[in-house]
Image (cartoon, rainbow, N blue to C red; front, top):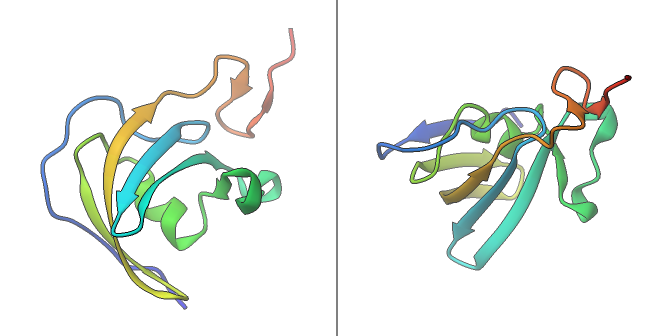
Length: 100
């Protein structure tokens, strides 16, 4: 199923990108996701692919954004509580540690 996302509120702060950790809230509580490339995803470990419906919808969003995401399980409404920038030791293009 193709994901659909809509932005419904103005945001502030850092933009979510590959390597960012994004805390979101929905009707069932809060959860945290780290955005990664598809080969590095581990949903049970909190690492979601930027090609998943939720990952795609979170890219480029900021704290305070409220988004609607069509997922295989149905429509989810998420409020972005916090966006923490990529870890300094991650290469943002590959989500792999940088070589020195």
